[in-house]
Amino acid sequence: MQIKVVIYSCYQRTYEPICNDILKLLYGENYNLNDVIIEIEDTSEQGTKNIQSQRRVTDDSIYKGRIIRIFEDDVLKHIVGVSNTNYDEDREYEFASGESNKNHSVYGKDNYHANTYLKQGINQIFKYYFEHKETADLNFYLLDTKRQVNYHNNLYNCLSYRELETIGFKVLNIGNVNFSEYEQQCNSRINHNHLQFASLNKYLRDIAYISKKNKGNEPSFLQCDEVEETDEDGNVSFMTEKYTYTFKTLSAQQYDSLLKCWCLKVLADKENTKIEFKLGKQYFDFVSEEKKVSEKLSAPVKEIFNLADLNIEYTTTEDFMNEKVKAENTYLRYKEANEIRNQTLFRNNIRKKGIPTECAICGEDNARLLDAAHLWEINQIKNSTLKDVNDFIKKNNLQQTIESSSEYAGELFYKKYYLANSGDNGVWLCKNHHKQFDINNYGFDSIYGKVVLLKFDNKNDALKFRRDLKNQQLPANVLTPLTRSFLKKRQLASNA
Image (cartoon, rainbow, N blue to C red; front, side, top):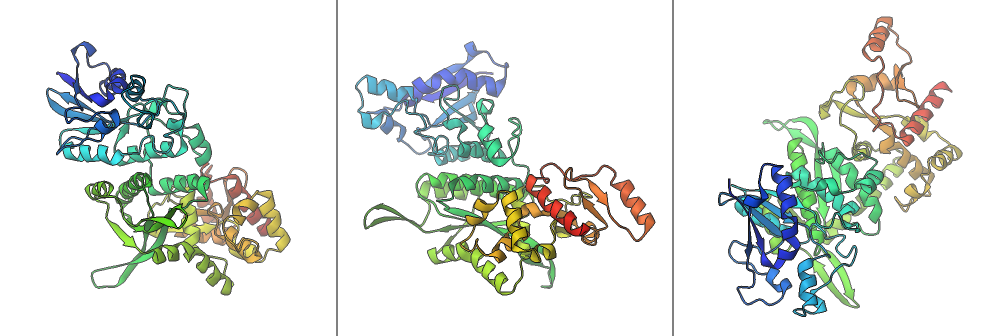
């Protein structure tokens, strides 16, 4: 088998040194570097002068951008998209040789491309892949992972690697990435050999954790509503979930939105869950009295949305803002009704926790048969005193979290509403085990989450329950420190 690697000349000094590493990652030891042909395709044929302008040249089928093409017996088999870098040897050479000015050569500035390291211009890489996907696969390679720089370990880039692998594209040298910040922020362990998100809930959980880092700018949000499913006769057969991802975008944010929408759709399709995408207008101030408006995706990015079968609805600024304030309007309605239980919010918050959507007792995973069960019971919270609520909040360091969640955070009713609907106050149970939990047939201890038998009117039922659930306990990802506190409150109230 003859292997040929094709590199554009405007990237030759940067890409040629990494070819051997890429081939090893693709083929293992099943190739001989001496038999590999490395071909340099000239990008200066059309009279372009500097490196940057050569990289922008396109014709009917070729994007002279960040890709390396690998052929087997003259058939394109692998497309490798390469990350952006500020240690670009081609630009450095051009600048040092006097062939370009400083405006075209920025070299060696750490974190200059931190947020666009992989995603800047990624739509062109995808476009080239879609044009050749009948014969070729798409992989990515990360530059500068062995330099003393950190943007390849950036929290948001790490999320992007997981999104790409979930969609179906491999990051070849992912073993060089340090996920420690990601693991700490998202309270999870990362397996470099299995980066794909296991479920929509897991992905939503990580998005929720990471978004906490950027409270000042919330250009996108995702909500989940329960909608009625009807049969052929128009009768309501059951309630199902529908997700809506509403986003705004400008410039490089488009690439981030592209990956998120794509990843959401892949996971939703896998779970047979409905999801739709909405794009809203966004105004950005650049200079006084001058604004730039983002009301649609740029044509190149929109093209990839279409190729990936990501259908977008456009929403007005007013509709977008109405969605943003819906949560607070909902709170006011519940406050007026003196009802702290918001079951839709509660279920969504458990989803954001990212735990498997299955009964914690028997493993039932049919969403139609699952309930969101409260650990610290609604009536117990509702009847709690101001001191009891404030003590719980202080003990669990929730002051800042609650204060940042709403302008009504100082109200006692809001604090109870927040605690009642916290994802850490919930667990998925099938309807049968939920009923038994609510009447205190069993409970969970607040240290290890072990199932504890409390009371059964029927001795035989008690013996069967104990036999079936011997050594059963809540999984570690369910039993957070805050969940333990909620369980302890339930136990104290039950023993009172």
